[in-house]
Amino acid sequence: MRRFSGVLFLASFGLVSGCGDNGNDTQGATGTMMTTTLPPLTTTTSTTTGTETDTTAPTTTDGTGTATESTTTPTTTETTGPTSTTEPVDTTAGPTTEPQTSTTLTTMGTTGDTPCQEISVTVQPVKPNTMLVLDKSGSMLQKWDADADPATPDVTRWYSLYGVVNQVLTDFNDKFNFGMNLFPSKNALGEYKMTACLVNDTVEVPVAELNKDAIIPVLPAQSNMTIAGGTPTALGMTAALDHLKSLDPAVPRIVMLVTDGAANCSTTAPNLTELFEVYDANLAPIVGDAFTVDSIPTYVIGIAIDNAPNPNIQDGNPNTINPYEKLNELATLGGTAKAGDEKFYSAKNAIELSDALNAIVQDAQSCIIPLESPPAFPDKTIVKLGNTEIPMIADCANESGWRYIEPMPYTALELCGTACADLKIAGAADVEYYCDAG
Image (cartoon, rainbow, N blue to C red):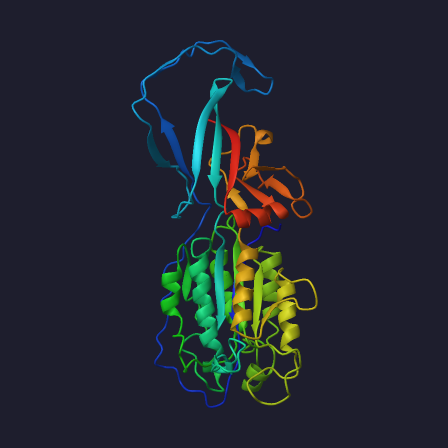
């Protein structure tokens, strides 16, 4: 499994001559950028009072540095009832939401003068920092057969996108740290001018935990009929990537991009004709560099994309290029290409759009597991999914199992291959290892 960070980009362009002004829409609040780190663990210990234990019994050493008891002295125990105390482990991280965990600490002897403890942890993977980059161009008001049923009324592409985004945020709100950006912005107009290409310098909604209730109110309403503008995909991606790059690189970062057309509104276009009628070649290197330089993958979803060249006419869409091929290129450069001829996720109706977004979030879930403290004996760590022990491996790209996230001291491990897929289904793993008590 690759360890990466990425952005989900949703984009479409459709500058239609005579589109209505959406000046009544208000600008979305951006909020404050957050730095997200590996989430802390919650430690739960069971305490029994009134127990006397003879700690002077002789010990022997097993050769690994861990001392084990050779004799056991009788103990007198008076049980007053188990009590549970929950203490969050101190970290230097910023604010995070603690995953569901359970930890048992057991003193195993001594390593020199330092007690060594066995830690048993059930912990969820870290939550990827994920930007939804959504196309809000005028062409998103075009209608389609959303439910693949000709007997029911057609709805706009935006109506379907709004509904699917709401569903994904509901289902995965606790598994991803979501943020959202629109291109163009809600201030963009349906004019053959630069005003059709407006994009905010900062994202509409910064990444945060449990962020659904912050994102949905900022989106144009599901039944909105005044959204307008071109397809400034490069500008929308740039703002989203700048935000992700400001976050902790130790946490996976992802972009999910959704669009219904090819990018235009190039910042280097010399005139209005080239601004709208020529494909923006700046987009491809932006997506490619995000993946190769910053380890941020881009998942691409195309809405109603035909595998054919655009006509050579002045209609606000890049002339003569094939939008299908351009989205294939972006998925490949973004590190998320599917097998086969179709590299991006293509949606011809709302059902396929929902399936695509759900497939992406399943694929993008993290398989990185934080450790409460570095293991004193790294080779003694045991990782289990249910009752199945997972083997330790060296090559995550070609083997199934688990490995430590470098460098030492190890503060996280990663499941790879089929073990990663199984972790996404299970939702949590059990980790047993030894650490110094400190």
